[in-house]
Image (cartoon, rainbow, N blue to C red; front, side, top):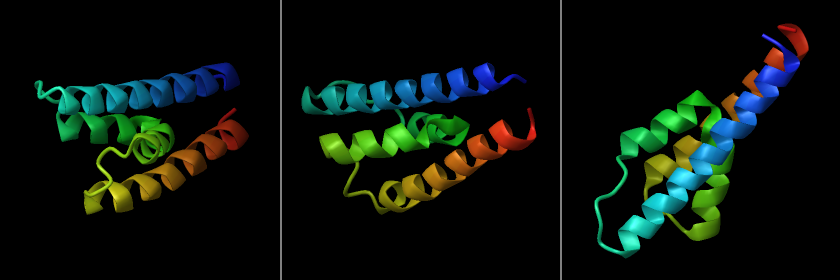
Length: 91
């Protein structure tokens, strides 16, 4: 893997996490079919936790769910440490 690939992947998965959270909030406000929580968690596990968490806080989405307000910050730390590790040691 290259430095550029890791960086691009991290940016894209985080943007996707933000967009999906915004879309779910929009769907919730308009009483439409929602995006599954498992999808939100999957994106976070794949590296999108930082922007997912920031987006949730910014738009006040899922902030009453303890699992999201505890789990997302933990996954954010794990994601950031994993990316730093990959950028420093795997390249």
